[in-house]
Image (cartoon, rainbow, N blue to C red; front, side, top):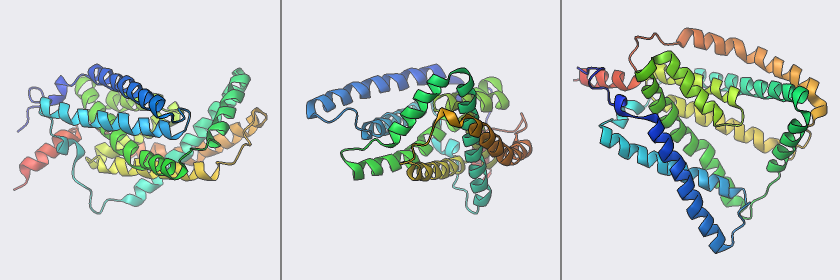
Length: 293
């Protein structure tokens, strides 16, 4: 049997070391990419560059993490878990829709409060959002392919592996499950443009992982979320109707979205928030493997 105090490999996994490596990768890939762009004469402002960088940075970091796992003797298959055959995907889809509605509600309320305290900042923010929708790539087909891969494959796999897999286990080892859920989700949210909405999303993904004991479930939910977000982005691409004059509509629509989504999300959290003594997925999967004939 596994002794969680002496045999826990996450005790040796330092988060600050992971962040240092991640930012060094950003600098290295950015430097190499800048040299290549300058040499080839490709437009550095082409929107495809952002998604290429994203795929390269997270892809390289993911490969480095697997190598680090071997050094620390962490078996990735126990953290990932088994593919959940016959899982209740209808529940997952409903959760994704609720989180999306909640995130949009939080974003709209954020716009409303910004309109009260910093209207000029909000105006410039909305203009930049509208401008980004109208950006065209010099290689449109390749751009759409890489963008779709980034949203539906790279982001769900790498971000769930990092935030729900690694950070959740490390923080739970250090502080316990509840602080681990909250801190890992907060860090996840802060790396996105809608930090509060995405922190809530992170909490839901963490609960799905702890409930199912497999990263395949939050990965699939993340992919669903990004697929819908891509669709909404596509249909609103030509919309340029954002304006600070719509501040009151931000308030009421935001409140309606929260009223629609909050009961489902609160109920899901209440029913699925883990007991502090519940084993983490990594160790539960090890025990399951040892118990199998």
